[in-house]
Length: 374
Image 1: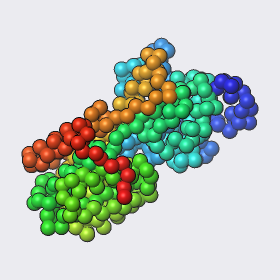
Image 2: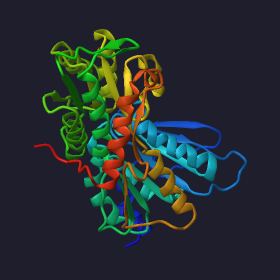
Image 3: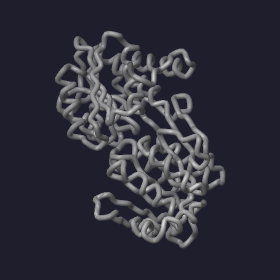
Image 4: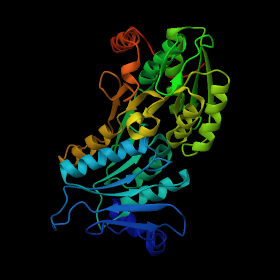
């Protein structure tokens, strides 16, 4: 059964239950619709206003936390914007507020006939379960998944990252600095404590990779360093992120690394208040959050924009790679430890040299970075 037949089989009642799902971008700007009276909104961006047909129509289903996180989702947004500019595509965005909404938005784009979406981009590991059910029902629809993999489905192109490698690098940086006197911007260390922290969004295998790499990097600097770990249970609770980070700083942590989306903004607030340091994630957060640039030592950049742009380009060029899994790490420049825009120049050169060496060793296979915690 192809996807058009599936729409018919769904029946009028089923289609009506997805009100607004078959409408395409409105010409000339941005349209917002609300699903079944909820606060969740879908935004449509019209890319062409001269009447010409787009190179492709793409549906974007973002991860929980939505746009404006200055991190993961915003990186994906940069990728689709790049595709808009360079490839001439049109796209529509959906920002689910709960994981239960992933299936309906995946189906929404797959069922659409006006426009007919050439690709549905599913951003975030939490969408895997829903996509595993959705994709087989729409065999003619092309999907892409970021942060997890479904190689058994030939209409899904999967992209994963070696987050543990970049996390090792920023962990090594944190470990080297917490053992010495270091002051820059609005922060300073207390080397007699030798303590750092990690704040995760939700306790999931993917986020555990960040934690595992970070802890390994810290211990590579000094086995005696204490690493405090806590999970907020959310990617969108900055107040909880701040609460956790304040507690860590009060215990003596010099530097806290977060892998928590918008929750991590609270970590930066805590660092400012306590005169300590923080490490960002996914995007260069010293740039996306400039008001905290004086406490952000570095960011573990995860170039989510790369698979988004690449997958759209593959569809435009009729080179869609369904069933494939693309892995991006330090060697592929999909992951990188990027020094803070304001504080990077203050980090001692000998520390930077050690990070350069460790990067080379990871790529060469001389340092094996764990992907799970003990």
